[in-house]
Length: 183
Image (cartoon, rainbow, N blue to C red; front, side):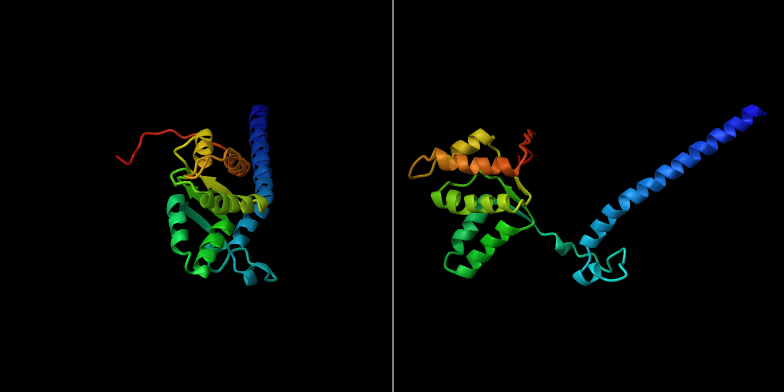
C-alpha cells in the first residue's frame, strides 16, 4: 500500500513541477509575444489604454524589406538621372529600408560612381544606423575585393578594401555551395 502511495505522490509531484514550469515559461514568454504583437498594430492601437493583446488588422507594412538585384538597381538608378526626385527616392529607399538584401553583388560592372557614391554610401549609412543588411554573391570576399578594386579607369585597392570592411562589419560570412539549379 505504501508503494502505491509513494507512486501517486511521485506522479502528483511531477505534475505540479510541470505545471509550475509551464506557468513560468508562459510568464517569461508573454513580454516577447506582446512585443511582437504590438509591432503589428497601428500606432493608435499600440498606445491604447487599456492595451489590446491582438491587432485588429496586422500591419505588416510596419516592416519594410527590400531584395534588390544589385546590377539592375544600378541600371535603374542610371535611368532615373534625369528626374532628380525619382533618383533620390529610389536611392534613399534602399539606403534606409528596415532590412536590405543586395543580391549578386560582384556581378555589376564596377565604376567609381557605383562603388564609391552608391555602394559605399549605402553601406556607410546602414552601418551607422545598425540596419540589417544581407548580401549574396558568387564571389568569395577576397574575389569581391579584387572585383571592386578594378574599374575601367584604374585599380584602387584602398577604396575596395573600405567597401569590404563595411561589408564585414554588417555581415557574418556564410559560404553556401550547391549545385547550379539554373540549368
